[in-house]
View 1 (cartoon, one colour):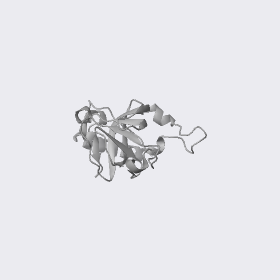
View 2 (tube, helix red, strand yellow):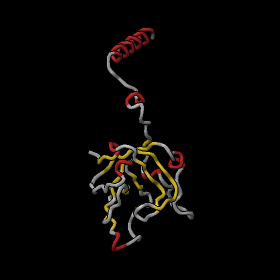
View 3 (cartoon, rainbow, N blue to C red):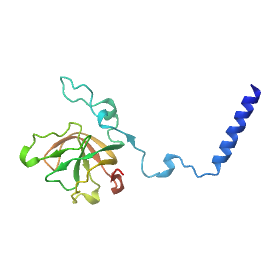
View 4 (cartoon, one colour):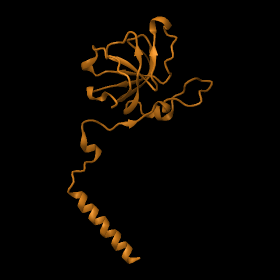
Length: 166
């Protein structure tokens, strides 16, 4: 028993000494000016199954209000995109606004993504595939510039936070 403890202690000390020379940084040292984000998936938006009250937000979604989150989803294809705004959904969606009007197949868990202040006049062209986004989560009913009512919004504070996943 004594040999096992001393052998384990020796291995641990070798590992610690070996790591001491490497430049290992704690996550908060990587970008001290940008707070860490919490992973959020579309499945964590609303309680399941949907009950008599309709879509009810989960405790996790409510607890992340005003906090930085990381979300992956698909950019919604729109006929008439709105400057500074696009929608992100859990699956690829194409909404023909002119033909269907407000009667479309947009999932209830769609997020309205607001671009950084520098890009509020730009219309972001659709790019297929999965997107990785980070930003501040905003909740509550709000009429958007495209005429839709949103409940979940992601406010992007820097351009690097809006990238298609590679």
